[in-house]
Length: 147
Image 1 (cartoon, helix red, strand yellow):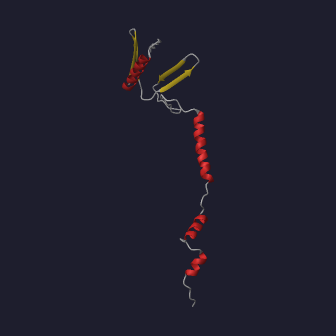
Image 2: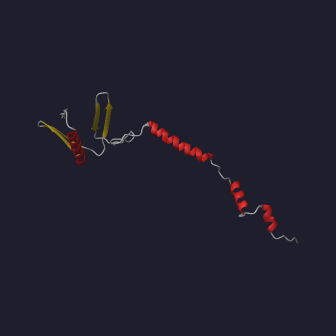
Image 3: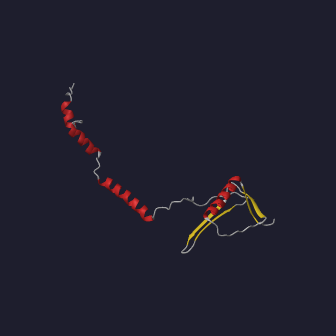
């Protein structure tokens, strides 16, 4: 089978990049991607599962973002963790560490507060008169008559 291939590189405005990506997304949704340039074209049917590779590089004088989709006739088995793409930067590791330290400090404060044991709770009820001590309970019971 003859290999059809189109490569393209040019300087474009951000709005044009967005338009290309939106067209690509619409083609992916439809299940068919056709890329055409100067009368040559590549037509591809897209499966439900495909490989995706994203590479992002931040260099001193240049940034680079590459997105590649590929697929074969056999099914794809995912083997990596999910990828998040947002417009928000994740918190700095220091911020996460501070949050964890704050949570640990709260746990330590709770741990230093006095904890009422069952004995302490019983003593409180005795003091409040809600319970009688075994000695007091014996005093208020009716005497048991022996036969």
